Length: 110
Image (cartoon, rainbow, N blue to C red; front, side):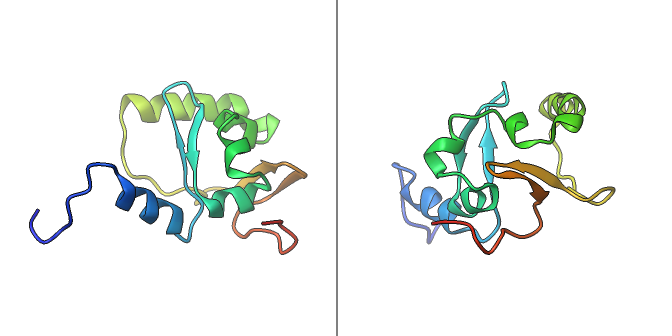
């Protein structure tokens, strides 16, 4: 593409990822979190570095973990854009317990 700065270090990508207003969590093929932006950290009540020590299923309520592993595996076999939370309210296992993930709690620490 022309007109875009050359960025071999990925610094521009990292700045965009970190500035994105929604929580974004990247996982590897085994479901290990490899990167999370600040919004996700606040949403889940963890420091960004602490999120990177977890598996994505650590953030899923226990009753949904088995289904989440199957859904994640299916997505890895056939990635496609899909809406999340349209058939059910999204919940997450925050550091301090479960809560809907549509909005971060006002008491989240920085």
